[in-house]
Length: 275
Ligand code: SAH
Image (cartoon, rainbow, N blue to C red; front, side):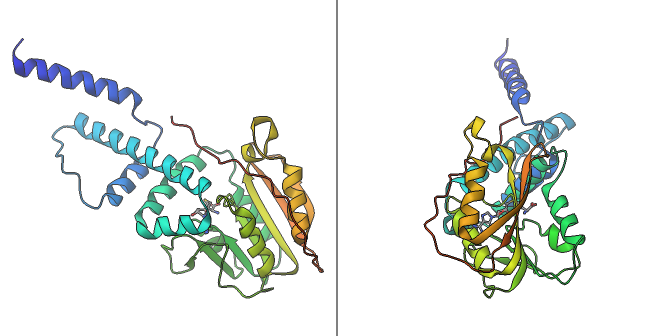
């Protein structure tokens, strides 16, 4: 075998091996956001269809890995650390969100849709605060005034901040929403902030990943979670365990609040498996 032939066989084997584990489950969407986050076009010129699809797979794999890394970061650091992290490289937020959308597309039902319907069934005069709004779909889907908060703002209607510290006035909103956003290790601070900005009798709506609140798989006890929020100053009005992937909690802010030492359960990170 000539030297060139040997090299070519080696290259082909390498492609086959890598091709097998490449993240086929990750979308083109993700691959384009990694390309975007890398700034410039790929320095590797692809001359054939097969090498370009190989490159796409590699980009998708990188992007899926990036998403899982960012997701784990958000679940294992505090809100102010997460804010600093994304401030340094806001393009990572797009990488995170295309991976997030890809995960969500596999869920039979979206918690955001249920919350949007809940709001639409009530008065459009209710003022809403969406804590950890992502792409601000909630604000775009209802007639209500919605204040949208997230770590990065790609849309003029979104205010970039750590949601434990929003610019809202105290007792100024009717509905506070946390849709899969109690990610930081200091999540009780987010709920304290919601308590501050809610009017008496205001609503607190929380959707959380089921596994984070499943004691059978190392998650927190949902009763302890509800108890802690009630001690913060809320009444639990209903819980919905009927969805496969998430739980919905509905609370109302009590008229009168007493300060208490609260025992918050730990919410385990929601880590997505490599596919
Ligand atoms: N609520 C949206 C997005 C959920 S993803 C939806 O249902 O589609 C969770 C979002 O919470 C992410 O966009 C993340 O950036 C945001 N988030 C997490 N911690 C945050 C914090 N401390 N302050 C502001 N946003 C936060």
